[in-house]
Image 1 (cartoon, rainbow over the protein chains, first blue to last red):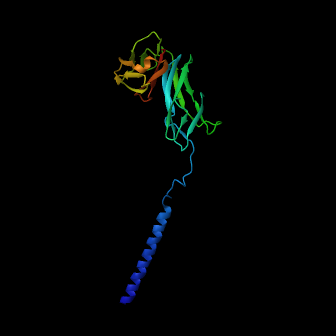
Image 2: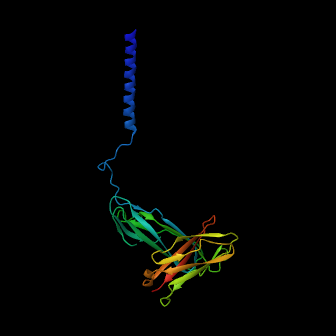
Length: 87
Length: 157
């Protein structure tokens, strides 16, 4: 009777160990895959303009207004701006 | 633009100068920016909007006098005064949204009581003395529409 109980406990321990092992494998496989600089895809030149609109509101006729926008190079290669089309 | 070649992490200033003619009403312009990566499609757009109004427009809550400054080369003033009148029935809360801080320094009233006026002082920095420029000052009213007013300043050296 004592041997049988001890065997049952050992079997339970084995099952728990197996479940814990599967859980660890599952958690690791669901986690974010670490990206090494070697695996990262090149983005190339990239232009970002966080504030790309401006409202002057009410302005007098026959006048000139101006606003400065800020352009950011957010890619991994040199950005070359070739022309601005007034629109 | 102050520069056209930007290494990663760098930035550049793009100044859009917009001349408003006799037309009155809403105007929108959407300049397109092209890069060497693709010469056929714009990489990005910027957009400016304005509502061109006549000098005697009485529908506006704020009356700004003068509406614009045009300073010829013989005008050697180093500061200008702007009178802002609140024609509304409530206190007007004002915010200075945009101005050329490298050329001008502005003393500005934060609010104006109903049916009252206040002066804003525009001081030219030493850098402004030796250059011609067309800039503007934009203020925003603290109403539910965030109504804006822009005062052009043209300085001929």
